[in-house]
Length: 163
Image (spheres, rainbow, N blue to C red):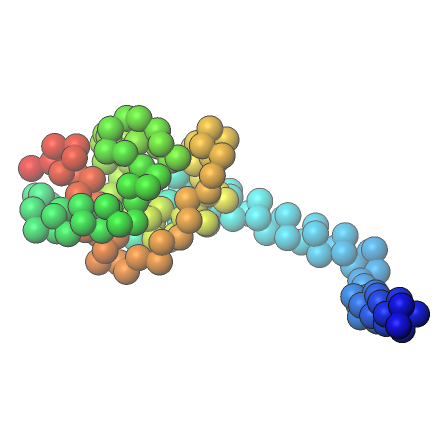
């Protein structure tokens, strides 16, 4: 019985080892791919606008006027569910930085782009990369609809005293 068990384990291990192999790229092809990716990333970072961020929002498609209290209320509700496990509305850092005065330091379209597209922004924005070194955790993509992100922005504006 033990011999069959040991033989079965050896056969299974050999099968597993053989199945884990795969087609490998020649060293030159891997180096070429890596060089191409690095050049592409450097070009993307060079084209990055730190005032707008990376995403679909800009001053042409995001118009901000007076505070919309109804939107701010909805934004507060969404924030309680999606944001407050990592952020506070004060300057205090929890997992991520506090929100106080954010809307005075960043443009509305930058905030919207970051809320809806955090991965690309974290890869390109030098200030966010510095922040990441302090916080040690990347902001996850919360998969918010544009309207939800806009409501969170309005709540942030309310926190900062927008009228």
